[in-house]
Image (cartoon, rainbow, N blue to C red):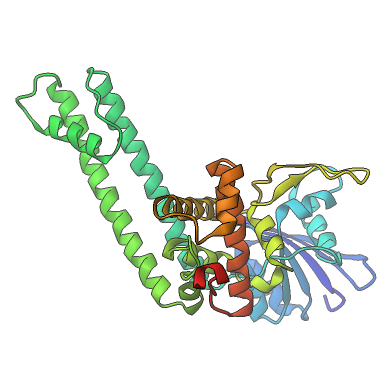
Length: 343
């Protein structure tokens, strides 16, 4: 046990696989553990390098092993996959993790704190409730459409449909259908109340975090995006530049270059889909405001909208906002308005 220097740790719900090697790369241990035995095994080891795929519960295990004195490195599963030799099983995965964690050019994921994970849970739960809200609204509209009743698009249309269901004198809807719509209406009301409560909790988290409040000064960045950024990016200095951060989100062109010829396509859409959607929504809000109040004070955006469609311009602006957000998080600075805006 004293000769182990590097361990590939394949985590799961209840069955864990260990692959350990010594300083010369020789295999010292291949073993499967139950959940209750994992920490006891690592307590007996001398401090070593432990590699784990960045997936569900990986940040928890990283914090636990670091508390025991080990050096833990989390890696994206996509970067570990090329090191799996042939068959896909727990033993092969642990061996691939052990090999990948020693590569000099491997990219690692910083370990998140419990506070960051809690904020991310807020966002994910709120997003789940929003999807459920959309599903309930679509169900209400579809059920009424079967009776030939169609309402305008938007919140007012759903309200009109619920008023029809609550009116017992309206003979277009049967009693059974009316009871079903009433149940869906109660469910919709409950979901909306829960979403508002999550919004208040996110706003309170935003006001208690200095980095989130600094990000809020960037045009197009509100409390929702600011808190999601702070919770998702454990250490912004792991990115070499703003472009590297934007590429991680998936807002840069996808390359298919060869032979010295650069071929750039649409955005790669890699990385965090939720963050990317928030950046694009913020960029569209900036463009919408600029179209209403004029774009003369933003020359770059004015020229871009003059030669590109709105949605293409929104992607470019989202890329720009992401780079500014990285600079503020990495350098601890505040947003400074461009000269054209400060005049």
